Length: 325
Image 1: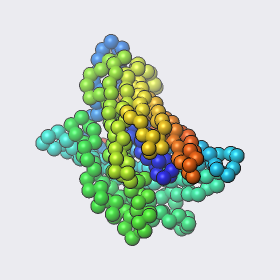
Image 2: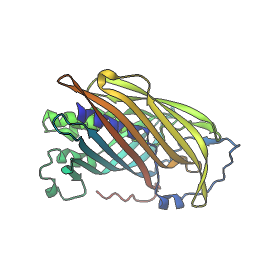
Image 3: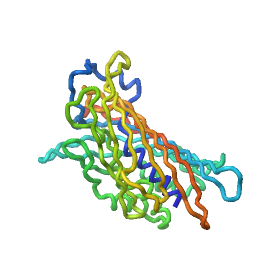
Image 4: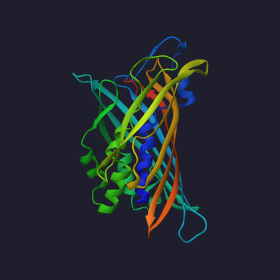
């Protein structure tokens, strides 16, 4: 149960992080002037036929008190994904499909200074010895699926998620299939699409907006509502260019004591480039207090998570993408 809650929190942070870019990538973008009193359009503008090369990183630390030892158990989880998003033509209703091409996966778990999992799809398969899930992760790193977004750029649906996961987990025991579907849930793939929290309208410095979203918990068959409050904080200059700094914070809209979730807080910030129509750097930090009851004893734990997403390049339609698997 505790492992599942940790995985859910990975999805929480990922869902709230906007796309980012490395400093080198920022230099290739154009320039734009900003003024605190002048409203400017902040919305996602996809470049048809281009490939957005992205990397997502999540780091999570958990402190779990022990029933038998005077010190807590310390667990560290890291998850990394390299992928590209191919922008497909818009449909008649303004929606469009985006194809996610996965290129690399990394997964690590350290418990009390002992390495439990250390996987990287770019290493030789012979180094996968002892990792029962390595084959599924390698399949994922060489696969693709499509996500449909509405005219505002927000995710509408994931195409054939069940069939996709059936192919990834084929021939594996049900326990592994269960874990993979929780770790890489349909909602998690949907939230990989960047710019989910943009207002999609003209705003100026000081303006605020609210994003109401859901945390999907497949194993429980429930959805937890989360509310994120955004503010256009100010213009900031980075590398002789101006970006809109967006800040956000949020928490669960309701109490969920029966799930062992005492509190969830999330804060983050991002820089948006109005010329490119995308966020160019972002980071989110989530802090969650959990509890589990064992033999009538309530055991609290603390989970701290940092998530980021970087835009490494935008490959135009007439250029061959660099896709190192």
